[in-house]
Structures are given as C-alpha cells and as structure tokens.
Amino acid sequence: MGRPRAFDVDEALDRALRLFWRQGYEGTSLSDLTDELGINRPSLYAAFGNKEELFRKALERYVEHHLILYREAFAKPTAREAMEHLLLGLADAQTLPRGPRGCITVQGALVSGEAAAPIQKELAARRLAGEKAIRERLEQGQRDGDVPPHVDCADLARYLNTVTQGMAVQAATGTSREDLRRVARMSLAAWPT
Image (tube, rainbow, N blue to C red; front, side):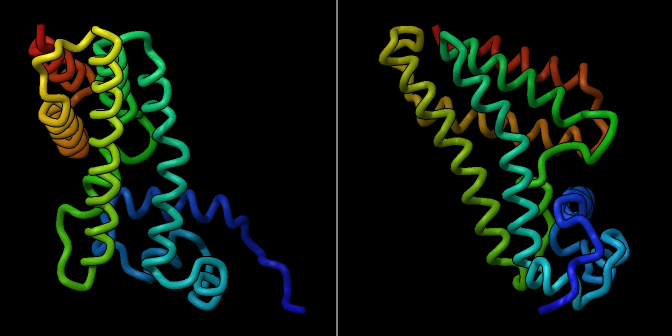
C-alpha cells in the first residue's frame, strides 16, 4: 500500500487550471506545472497522468464550474432574454478581478503546434458544443414563438458564439468589463425581428 498523497488533488487541479488558462496548453511546461502545484513529477504523473490528461481534467473542472452560466441563461423565459443573460454574464465572468481573464477553450488553442493537435481538437469540440447549445435554445425560442420563423437558428448561433469567442480574446488582452458589456448590448441590438 502506497503512502497517502501529501497534497490536495482538488486544489492542485484548480491551480493547474488557472495556469493552463493563463499560459495555454503548449505555453505550460511540466516544470511550470510542478512549480505551480508544489509537487514533483512522479507525484504529478501518479495523480493526474501526463500533461495532456491533466489538461483534460482541468478542462472538465472548468466546464463544471463555468457552464453554470449557460444553464442559468437557457432557463430564461425567452431566447432573447437567454442570450442577453449569457452575453452579459460572459462579459462579467471573463473579467473577474481574481483569476485568469477570457475563456480557456479559446485561449488554450490560440497558439499551438502539431504536438497539441489532440488538445486543439478537444477545445474546438467544446466550442462547437457551446454553439450547438445556443442553437438548440434558439430553436426552442422559435418553437415558442419568440424567435421569428424566418431566422436561421444555426446562423444566429454561429454569430453569437463568434461574439462570445471574440469577447474572450478581448478580455484576455485587458478589455474592461464595461467595454465587453457594450459589445454584448450591441450584439443584442441586432436581434432579429
């Protein structure tokens, strides 16, 4: 029977998440991870597997905590209210005073090479899942009568998802919360009638 771990796995995972979020997947080395987590490589491998597995676990943690906003938004009575809640909520969430700014699914893949192709695909799939969720909420709005029947929900979802990703990039580079909220409101001004 092995010795018990001398570190808190959940806290270590949170620290790894913040590091990957700030530096991206490829920008984060194993040395960065062991320094940030305060553990040696054998402990990192034993607890999390390799760097890719640790990134995937961190990404799952991100999804668990940060996609609550999507659920809250999609529970709003109309599709327009749902998208307003989502866009304004993302402007707030991506500019929290503590922690990394932006979105790990966008920043994690902005700069990466061939070695990170599996991670790029994973992040692209996550972004597409977000777009699909938006499209499904818009389609529900269309069935409920609050999205006009002539609207192509796939196109509108792609547009809104592109706005959210652009907001994430802007947040990561220091754009203020209020400026991102203005972007959200401007996007909503184009809501189809």
